Image (cartoon, rainbow, N blue to C red; front, top):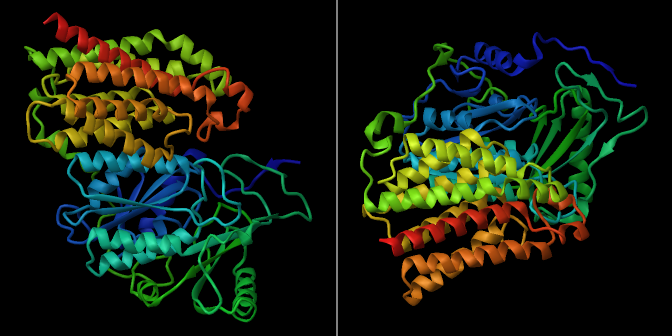
Length: 566
């Protein structure tokens, strides 16, 4: 029987912001950005992005896992922590605010736990930050050993082993290493750690009733230790972390540590070099614990032993108390770009008119496909693909008439991303925003004022790579990439063969349509469709792929018609 849980909270909607306020009052080395409730970012009080001369290390995720990750902000560990709502990925604007607040010329490493929302939102923030001139790298941590190797792109979850990766990266950054070297050490550490846990109860969300899913005499055990995720063999040196999940007394955690160490030593032949016991990454008030084991060498041990002021690593903190909060920094674009550069030009150049025609054709094609896309998506998804794409398309159409700088192709692509981000929402909105930001960054890197067909192809290639990187899909996964990847291949082939650009784009758009149609014969490995039977999938193409093919084809045909008319 479910019952109302007892909690020491005020408004359930304010638990995260009130937690942050209490955290910075308790530890004088921490501050938060004054952007509540949208921006919930904890940073080191001694760091300013404009002057910081070391690599910034940022992590974060949904709240409810305290002390992770805000409790590990400090010199020698994290430079900032981005807090989402309880069990919800932090929004892109919060991540960007954190990056801008602490990132200097040495760059920033984002350590991201392997959950779809975290990967997408941190990925989009990374692309946006790169387009603003920041040097950004990303390491995704998936240390969960509780499941056999999955099909598709979901992968292993990021659990308590992430804390050890944070410490290794933070110590490497504090030692003055370059962004590439800090990233390399963090990635290697992430590949050396595995975590498995056991829950004795479920947790209670603030303001919600407590579930009785785990009744008396039951526990939920992570299985699959034989999956060999971590390359540990007899004789290896290891680090052990016993992590409480929120409601497990320290006495019980110490019992677990006391039993685990000799078992690792005697039964598995491992040299246990370090033991960390406590609550590092919890799930609110869940009873239970997890065990993380990291293969260690002298470099990893040196990083773990390095001094840190992070309050919840087993080290105290001290110092004068600075102001508790500082203003949220504005993106450089608002300061450096003139209003005129982001307004619709009074007079369009020839290429500006062609770009306008292409955009109009693309969005009108999407608008006209709304009902078909929704119908297909009702069979293989959640039924709103057409409505989501429609919102993005109408926003682009409205915004283009007002302020797209159409004579500047790169900035126009960037503004399309902003329109999509504002209007679309959902996974599709994030993916298309990542697409636009990556294309913008590639176009912006070109010094020529005129964008050639080859440069458009390079921008498309960069956009596809970014969507694949952060979304996790590739060719054959039954996604929009199954339309865009064939289009890119044909486009590059025809341009290399010497075809004129408009013909090359039309031929590549036909490949996009064929690729989208071919998704009928693919087994979905991403999104809602991955839960749908193959028999149903075979009746309709992937809606996202069809939407991409339709707008690409419409834009290509419109450009060709425009060239022929002139």
